[in-house]
Length: 317
Image (cartoon, one colour):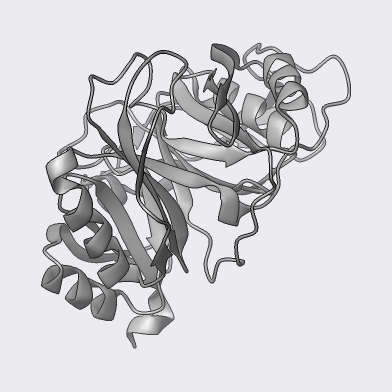
């Protein structure tokens, strides 16, 4: 017998109501229910996104692992890396090695701090390029996010860190000289694990901020995706100009390494990519499995970075 993790809800585009399902099944009630209350924008929220190729996963590694980690990313996914440097990227004194890795399947900002990492840096999962910092901060606050690091200057622009409902931290950044990166071949997914208590609040806040849309909301997603093959859980996929987000709603009873992978990368052929990864010293933590029309695995790169890698199911045939 399958068990559904958490309360289930299904969003209706343009409607103020949702269909409610029980936590133990997938049948929907006929009654309508209002979403849990969350801050809503009281004014028109501007579009501040630039494009998914400018949205970077933030990875912190020890300085001694830095070069090996960057090399393993390039060997696995291809692409190029910017010139490595040492900078202060926080509003308080600090020093970090920094390098931008541009792959066809996603952009990664790598940090190797030579000093202790000032709080709350190190737990922000993603950096989003915005068209203007002031407008982005106003939009974030209006849509329910908390500004936990107010804007500050860095060597090439301005930065801030916001926190969405549910405790998800995101960096916002703006460059004095606008960057120009090639479009991605495939857009990575930001993988966000949330409880049933906060998922709806996070989704509403992020959709308001990003002007995104819900692509799918599966109340009975296969539990193999979170290491619990005999069960099911709720999975929501969102797309916007900031890229893709997959929200995994669970009770938090997750076997390792589920919940540690903050980004999922789509590649043309999973087996080929995993072969390259293993040659580059990448460990396979979760062997390939099939679910939701994709083949997927979870890997750990030198330096400790854990990621999901997947390919369309048809690619393996």
